[in-house]
Amino acid sequence: MSEPRSPWSKHPSSRSRPATHEKRDVPKHEAPAHAPAEHSALHAREHRDVELRLYGLNAIQAVFARRPAAIRKLYLAEQRIPQLQPLLKWCVANRVGYRVVEEDDLRKLAASSHHEGVVADVLREDPQSLTAWLHALPAGPHCALWLDGVGNPHNLGAILRSAAHFGVGAILLPKHSTLALSGAAARVAEGGAEVVPFVRLGREDNAIAQLHGAGFGLAATVVRNGADVFGHELPTRLVYVIGAEGEGMDQALAAACDLRLSIHGSGAVESLNVAAATAVFLAEWRRARQVRG
Image (cartoon, rainbow, N blue to C red; front, side, top):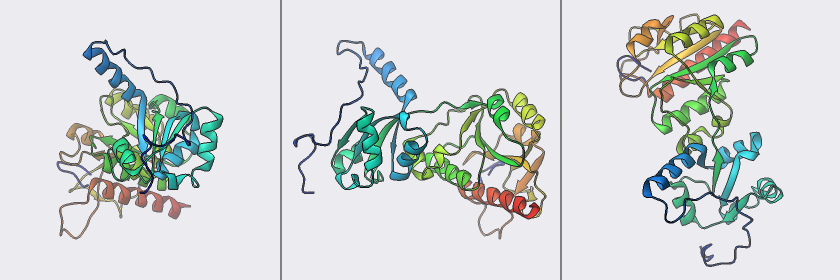
């Protein structure tokens, strides 16, 4: 939410045993050993911008189901081989490298103990433009989320999971937002990151005008002094504007919205976590749609 504060083994290691499960690796473009440090740093940064290291079974299975060609390299625990047979066969057929590694290696690769036995390097998917997204949008009710400053990757992942569950059409990112999908966010999203696209907005006033032109109402989600979301009629095409975890929503943006909505509760705590609040708002929009038939 927003305003002014948030609502919301026994096997030897893979290095010492024969690489019986390793296939041909996709060639990597590496800086020469003699390259200046700044060149290497630039190359690494560009590589991170193009590729994303994912971990977690559902996150990687979702990429394989929707855009398998994005997978560049796969690492897995031996016990995951039976579950991942279709993916491994695809890797062999398409000459994509995979390697069976130990738990410690997976933890290092993922920089997390929550890897669930599989890690993959995948190509990032570029955000769409608002114009392209609106042009492809079919007629009828739609909901989108405008994330005004949300930065915690676990919150982003939880928001993506809720957005996928409730059929949200897109995550709208402000023009200069640095928010991007991370491995941690994708794991928490449990496959939702492949379902809900990111859309990059242009100038704020132009974006609002485009959304209004497409029949969307904008609702600023605020901690207090907003209409009760449970008792307010919601537009059939709705953009919830969600503020940052700590600072809340930009007040000029909140003023430009058509509605100000709050989740009225007991008052025992100030507000919900931003991801929990987003799930509540989305559930109420979905319920209102079903009531209308």
